[in-house]
Image 1 (cartoon, helix red, strand yellow):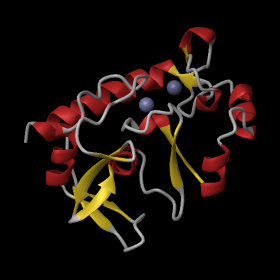
Image 2 (spheres, rainbow, N blue to C red; image 1 turned 180 degrees about the vertical axis):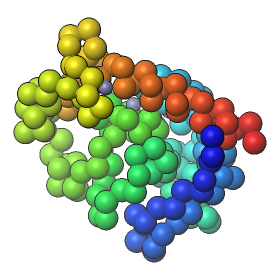
Image 3 (spheres, rainbow, N blue to C red; image 1 turned 180 degrees about the horizontal axis):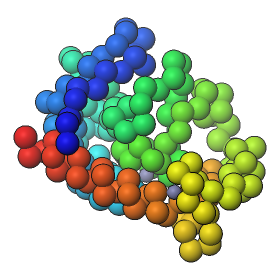
Image 4 (cartoon, rainbow, N blue to C red; image 1 turned 45 degrees about the vertical axis):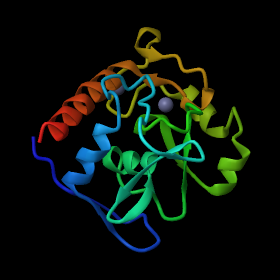
Length: 166
Ligand SMILES: [Zn+2]
Ligand SMILES: [Zn+2]
């Protein structure tokens, strides 16, 4: 598996590189990544409850780094909302980018939840049958595919181990 540096464009100061060294420091501060359904708790420094890590000389929120490592650049000006309501969690699959106003509102049942409810298949084409659905306490998670979560769990733990072992 190749482990490229990750370049993000989401900082106000311009693109920042999350080097392999930084990724390694990141993963050493996370206890586990083997279960995408559960929270991955940050074990190092926090600010206002959120994990922080030094990336390129800047104190950066760990959950934002996590999001960019797994999901891609955070669209300009957006906050990352923890669907699991656990600020210390760095599981990128528990997050969604929202506008600041949405983040403050935090409506439990949004229009998005209704969209989720109408879905019959996940983005990878797996049928969202009852036995393939994960039950989350927060309805904002929507109907999530168990099969995809299992594959993401396997891939994320493999990558964590790969990076940490370097
Ligand atoms: Zn979580
Ligand atoms: Zn799926």
